[in-house]
Image (cartoon, one colour):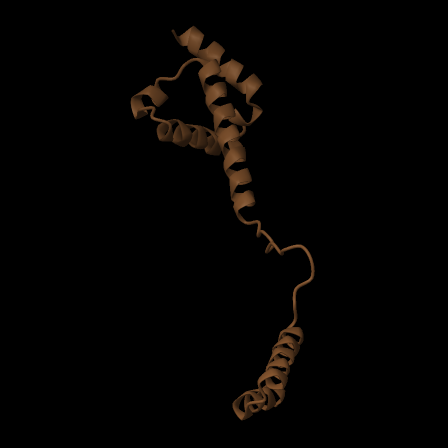
Length: 124
């Protein structure tokens, strides 16, 4: 059992060079353990992992999830521009001049003082 454990530890060191590093090793081990626990592994299952393949697969899955989560965060930050309708819109001046033209035509047609007053209000 001890011989198998030593072989697997050596295999992990070759596949994950940071595993044996004095500075990066403890952080990597803790990150993999935290990831495994977040994926439903129990503390006992994580502590009893002997096979190097399992550790490497957990490491790759952790890296993949980190990349996917960072891509999602970047996509959410993008702002979509406001959509405009094709063609040119009418300006306030064009709307006012059309309204005045209609009122003037009404005054010419009816000849009423009330219509003339509305037309003169529109000019002011």
